[in-house]
Image (cartoon, rainbow, N blue to C red):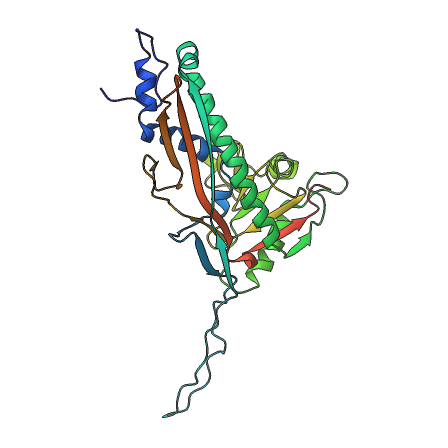
Length: 316
């Protein structure tokens, strides 16, 4: 009989067979953990590149120009074409780090609390994972981006009226003026900044009042979740794990950076090959319970730091 996902709370009939079968299926456990991670991970939506390594390290180039070193030259009839070099960006290296943690679930807890005890254990497991990897990645993002301009007025609305779209469009113009093919599409900000933006009175007047109007409205182009919203052609992504507050970062998420994952071949582990999370479940031999393990061997890299622009003082 197949096991449904998510599994219902088991009914006890002698032994707790249903929950035991669920924990014996690492793929089902992986699906449960991945569901939680998809809802909470932020940095995966910023560093959208997906690279893999088998050696545990990666060599990459940063801010490589899209142009040859010399422009095309006039060529006279029967003359040789001028030769130009094609330079690459500065080379950098990074090494993957294996992040992981375990949780143990006692048979007594399963028997007395049914499936919720397993669900809570999974959520705590993934919350710790997300907190660590997100914090490392967002710190790397903050350090890599050096281009910045101050906001015209605070987005908090104190004093002069905030001009949120004007600040964003100016940052957008600054990035486009680099002429490197960047097309900014994401605004990364803290929760307070996000709250100020989505509740701004001037923007509220431009937002559609009915959902069918979202796709055609001139300012808003879709809603995703409580921490993501699309306004003015930009997807706002908020995170509580930003190392610096009061800054909004506009960036091109298609080119900005990547996660480099290493899938370590270990017996008993399963992976969905999507977010490269690896999971193992194990029946404890000397005690009555189960152990669930989640790990990800990964390093974030910033390949195009010039594809991002900070707007400072947004919460002043």
